Image 1 (cartoon, rainbow, N blue to C red):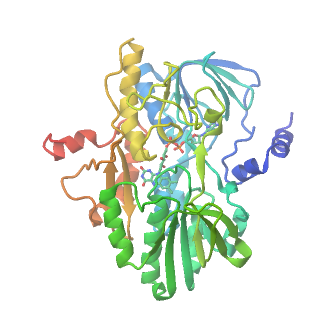
Image 2: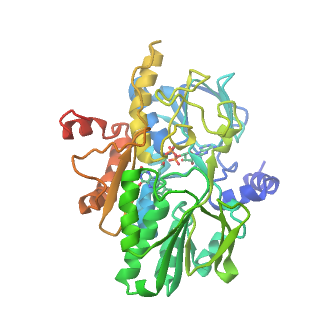
Length: 450
Ligand SMILES: Cc1cc2nc3c(=O)[nH]c(=O)nc-3n(C[C@H](O)[C@H](O)[C@H](O)COP(=O)(O)OP(=O)(O)OC[C@H]3O[C@@H](n4cnc5c(N)ncnc54)[C@H](O)[C@@H]3O)c2cc1C
């Protein structure tokens, strides 16, 4: 059948939800060339070629040889998402955030350019949207999470966002709209939302707010701007040490924080955002805006959710220490798609990758996994165009800082790390399977005391 016809059939069959996903490039249609009903087998099959999937493909190649590893990924481009914070504020280009997927797949590892449609762990098989059945001995699931812009009523078509002064750093299609909204800002409310769902990088919704504050000061517009952070959470940040520092900053910079406010509707023609008061369900408050930054609701990857690998919430059900699946011992998970009770970040993926590498080594030898993931995650809280608070913490919610200094202070050195060092660490360390997080360096910096 003609490729275009297939697309049309898929498109017409899918719901409004999926049409949104399509607009954001998230809904993967049958466009890749592949052999319908063909069969392939790999010793290790990796689902998803994002941060976790590529890091694990590189590690598995080193362990087992490239010919034994395959990764299923539809996207032609791989993005370093953390830099979108700076792209939305005009400090980096969107082009600098992406590289062709072909350039990050480890040489020799098979790239299956398809969309995973179903996972069948009882038969050790995966089905793709072009009818391919792939069997595996070991499966690593790294499918990320799903953005749900479509859940915000009235949110206009992306092509109209510039006109309606809306931006969102959370997708490659919308991140530059944030920068447009910032540049077009005249006077009035700059409103930033945080949804009532788990999110990736929980600091990102407020990082862009601090950058907006800095930009408006730099351009002389701050006096006529009212900056508001409307968050569903009951706190400004989940870890007290960093939350205390951030409360000081919002106070000093005259930023208004409205807790337990959840964005449910956008009336773009009137430039109004409607928030529900989560402490009083059904009660809403309308905010006029001159600029609106939307952080979309997020949820589990639908393929994981639709499989027997999911927990009750739809997330991949893994052991929080070993990352091995709780019911299928030959299945493992990494990153945003999992139910690991820590903040979803690339920094967490890095720490998880070295643990998972070790877990799989042990399982391959029929031994018991011995190294334990402590929930390490990190969030460089950008607070201006030259400062960052580097939050690092673990499952217990206690700070787990790499440097022997107080990281809750705004620092230029940490901004340099975020803007220049971490991208290099990502492309040349994590994705090549060499960067497993700062654990060993933390030990050295703290003279073995941490
Ligand atoms: C604005 C923003 C700022 C951030 N800031 C930071 C930060 O400062 N520090 C930090 O550490 N982290 C940050 N993050 C978070 C970080 O980028 C993610 O946590 C990390 O990329 C998760 O990696 P992953 O492999 O789990 O998912 P992803 O990297 O999202 O990869 C998932 C992959 O699966 C593919 N996929 C999904 N479904 C299918 C399917 N059905 N078939 C085939 N392929 C599929 C996708 O195309 C994608 O390539 C930020 C994220 C954003 C959006």
